Image (cartoon, rainbow, N blue to C red; front, side, top):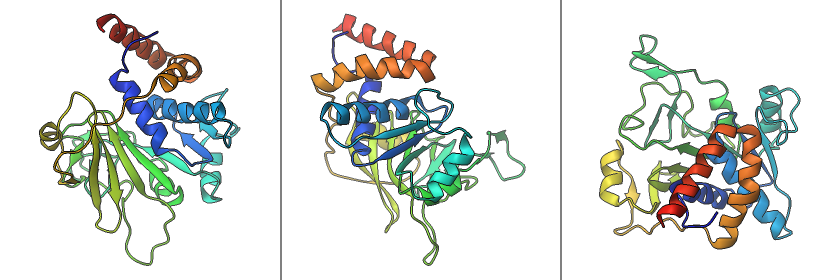
Length: 255
């Protein structure tokens, strides 16, 4: 498979860069793009003969050393044995608050989502939490979430090891400053622009006058992504792996 990087390959590569330096990454059972980013980082480190990266994907047989699922995930996080994790949400606001409960005033929510699960605990315990949501629209990125499942920041004196380190969407990559608190747009993905991102985001964020574009993966990285990583993805996320393969083939045909 040859041809330019697809939009999702750029997301995967951006996530791999954000994970650089971690030893153990944990990924949820329904997070194929974050999982691909972690797999790519692991492959790149092995190619470079660098320190091994451990990857734990809930629900995976091949890429998971847990035998008791989420209970062990929470134990490992509390013991400081997980360096990075991913959170998404039905709503995310400019303070990094995440809503996984629903839309409207709780408990009379108009739309109900699956629930908070252990999001608040992991947000506090894992040092590097990357927020990921492929959909970038005002209904997701709101000025203020309707319900705080997991708070982005805490009051002084509250013990907290973790919190939002970055936000990755289909349009751009943001860093998070806990001291303000708030997001800063670090780069714009190809085919998008600053005006579009502002219109799609319900909260204010900092940015350069002309933010750079998110770098595309080089040939070596693309080869790993389209070879080893795509094969590894198929074990846990066969539907997504097949969809990504079709996107790559379509992009190559159009080039």
